[in-house]
Image 1 (tube, protein in one colour):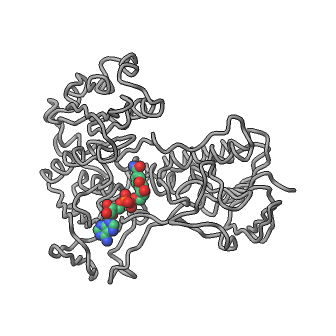
Image 2 (cartoon, rainbow, N blue to C red):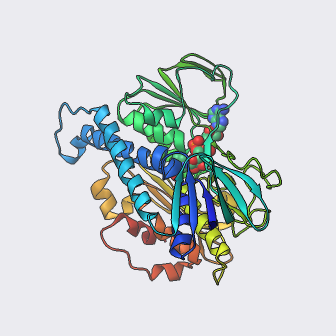
Image 3 (cartoon, helix red, strand yellow):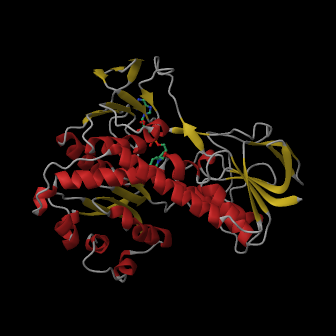
Length: 439
Ligand code: NAD
């Protein structure tokens, strides 16, 4: 049998593509060596958010006094927290399996490798069997990057994010190398559960790619609460649990390395002509330089976010199916969230990237925010392009901005002007009203 599409990798890109193509009546084969759902579902977004939710419940209980609640001797059971995380992951993996359970979609468990390719067909081998397909979608994801720091290899104190999620016990203390998204989310988890945390970041600021006014609010709160944040600091050596830096030494039970991820090219080594530049090079339709070979998700090295991967997969399959009108990938309105406490959410351009008017307002201009966020101020910034008068960026800190950043994404994606956006009605009282209030 010749499939229409062979997919390497069952993460958000892979399962989205399989679902879309098989729903269109095309025969698809998807190969996954681990659990369906990829990094996001098994060792990324979902398990971290589940653990962070437990941590937030505990933190809120121990800070409940400000809401008139007396909660004394509150404790937690990390094994139970861990087991719940496992249960959530199992449930969602089963959901993906159910989605792909249709007559046009074959899911093959095993390590797959492309063994040959022509413009007419791609041949893949898995578990000793060969599969032929007209098109190939590579969505093999990414792996944690291990920097060349002396003392990192074969050191039992070193964790990556996968090790941290697999541990059934909390570390007694932790040094986190890399104050990016993974680093700050784990800093939140451990800090809220009472573990002493040090964050080491090479750049002058944590979360260097985000709006710095927003980041400053988070940093200020975390430092006041006792998280030790060392910026402009490079790790020169690690000796067991001791981290030697350009800014003094520190010691911890565990050292989490979170300095970025790299595309995973396992299984496509035979495609020696495939263009690669910090990721597989693709056009606006996710096609590579090889006819009938597409790529989506982290392996493209673009924006390593699950929702970007899913959208890229939709675009790739649309192109293979020659759907009219053909959709392109548009990176201008990709929302992103950092699940710290408070959350940070943003979409579109930063003020460094555009000539714009900036509207800014503390979140306390929202009644619901004041009711539910005692002692917090938050911030909402909206960027308006000076030439077009359209909304080009929104940057927020304050709970639960992750839940309404999609409204801001919509405005940026549609190129709304301020008068257009002002016609949108927001429910009252919700924190989302800040998006209108800020104008
Ligand atoms: P990242 O690029 O977000 O952050 C890595 C950080 O490490 C950067 O701030 C960088 O300056 C710093 N760094 C690099 N080398 C260093 C060194 N030797 N010493 C100290 N600091 C160093 O990468 P990440 O946090 O590892 O995350 C990987 C990917 O996963 C990212 O693309 C991220 O967006 C994605 N992710 C997203 C979410 C989310 O959407 N909520 C959550 C987790 C991960």
